[in-house]
Length: 169
Image (cartoon, rainbow, N blue to C red; front, side, top):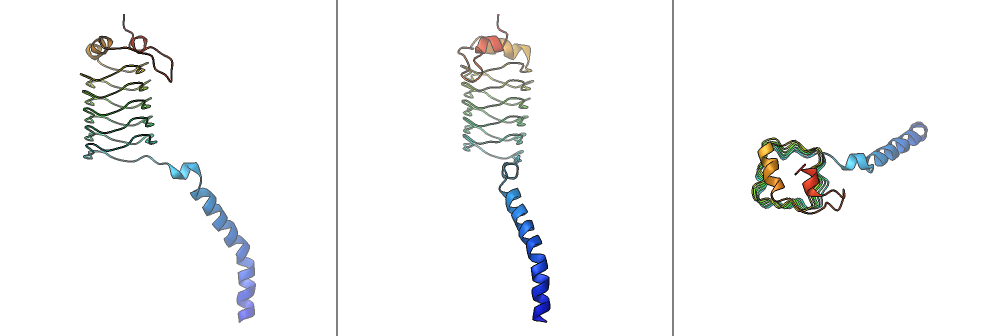
């Protein structure tokens, strides 16, 4: 009996080793280590998300007042209807982000890149936008006029002047 078990073990061992090796390679691959998080409707006041990769995550209708998102990768993130009042978005990458109906009042967007973002009906009153890049951002004309009135600086990542990215006269 033990000889028969030994024979079965010897036949299965290479397959088990290969399966275990494949599982280890998959678990350690970069694709398996990143995933989009769902923070929809969460109460995240004062949360620290600084310098994190939050690509494609969703913060729809989340309360992020006074939160720190500085230096974070927020590409493709949904911030639809989110409260970002007084949030720190310094140097954040918001390319192709959905920030429609978001409240960015008094937010710090210094050197942020918002290229291709959708900001229809977003409110930026009191925001700091020095060096921010608004290239191809969809927003209300009155908000664009408001931002042109306070726009200064050049974005250190894209090399574009904030006023030029807002199409200010």
